[in-house]
Image (cartoon, helix red, strand yellow):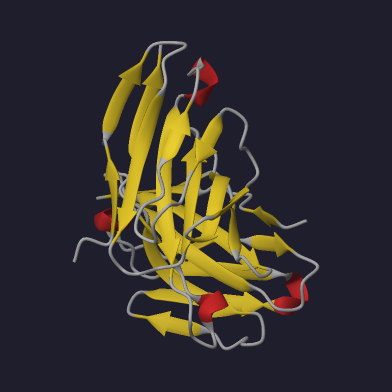
Length: 114
Length: 117
């Protein structure tokens, strides 16, 4: 069975602070895929990044960076110099198996105050 | 680009009524999914389909039915609506056909907010 744990439920920071959102996953599959989605207050789900289990290279995209560590089964997401527009719920998700069903974590509500 | 389109955006039902949530995608994606999102929870898979004529249950299928007569459409039907089905429903689709298709992200519709009173 697959499981995604986002232990942090709510995080509040002041604008320009850095913030890291944690994600820990469990799976018995050797090949799997990890995703982060953003859900702004308007409610839609926005795809941010995917990572394959066989590619542990970290990635940076502007103010966003992701740290994938298979040894600790973690796929953490860092926002540098946070902005009010980053306020949203962030979901980590895991996909494996032939039909690639997504297993979501419960999400982390990030509030960035001006 | 329309992507994944869900209708209606909002709906209020009475207990015992039935309705169909519509989902259509114009990306020629074979894989389609229905999720529900309850407050403070992540999304849970209701049903999914790997192509026209093929559907299968997800984690929380009870009280729902689906059909997939075309590649584009994947409607979700609620029979005998119950208060426990009050939720936000998301439809998603995913690309297939390439070597790394399993790594393709799911594209989500904007959701249907359903209240059952």
